[in-house]
Image (cartoon, rainbow, N blue to C red; front, side, top):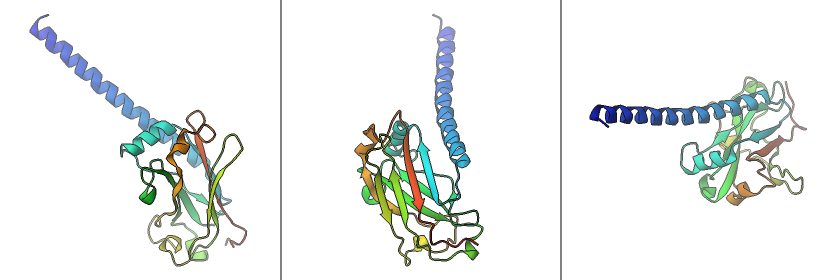
Length: 198
């Protein structure tokens, strides 16, 4: 093979490798957009949200490698004119749960009707990892502390997240009751019985 042929083959191999890298990045980007679209179509106005999280193995790997440390639901609401909120999950943990636990947090967001709502937010929140075999859901419930800045009227887009840095040990992501066919479900429920919506 001549020198010019070797250079041409090398150039083609280099371009092919670049194409494969680009293709891989586009697949990840497409998967993220698909998740956002599915979730945005599922936005609710009753204080509860069921979050379907596909590609758990890849998302956990991305979290371990520091590419994408957390994932977040689109906003959901306690009512059409209610509190705006979301859920954030760290598939390799956060804070005291880093590298040992799945961390799940509740986040209050700045909403259009905040001036008409009661502050601080003090309604019970339940975070649930759904057992797809219907045997034992993992449930963590907390009552917000009125003195915490996480539950005051939001001044920026999102308040500081509050929740469960040690929601469940990371090995839960290998348990087929909770992650089936690389998909898991997390549900959030806010007790709306005492909320007055304008």
